[in-house]
Image 1 (cartoon, helix red, strand yellow):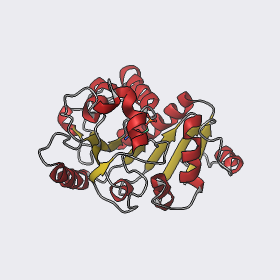
Image 2 (cartoon, rainbow, N blue to C red):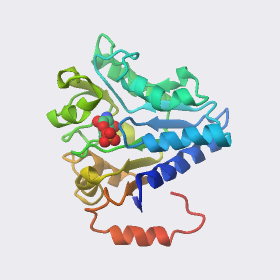
Image 3 (tube, rainbow, N blue to C red):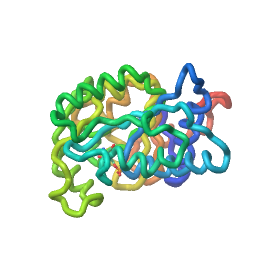
Length: 263
Ligand code: GLP
């Protein structure tokens, strides 16, 4: 695992954007680039930077396919807080990605269990995802894999913790409007991506980041599954890095990176 500690959230956004842009540029019509997208505030600066590069530097996303990590059960795609809507509004609508190439679980499927199975197949058939963006919840969740999620789980229905519902209530009028259930790619599904890029900023994420990066590999901290992945990059600002015990080593590693060694 590579841990990149940068001064500000904007710096983190630029480095995440560099990684995504590299994958996008390497794609061909026969080998369409596939991106795994996360919601939440963590990847927003990277999305904004990629939109800027699309507009100002001609970075084209034509042919790119995207797969969302998760979705609320019960929200139709057109609901403003469905993750389908959020990803479209914050990212893909501003790029030359065809709407039918933006995939996500069907939150309003009559049977969420079926929707979860279907989405697992869709990700498998469309994959492997070249780069999967991840945020981290204050309790160490990734996607909506709450603590106790199997480290080898596939896409399925999960029940949100009270804390996650509370954390996400800011996007809804009332706490009661936050769905209790979600469909999320499993930790095993996420692990099939070729490159995992987790980004976090701010002191509220410091203990979750430390647990995921330096704590034991455990279902109690779903983000710790990154420790099993052959290519995982954690990009954090100083505040989110504040509880990392080996921060000096990570900084030293970054300073001594080989010139041709990408993140
Ligand atoms: C939600 C999403 C996660 C995200 C988390 C953290 O629960 N399902 O994918 O990582 O929120 O969100 P934020 O980045 O806003 O702190």
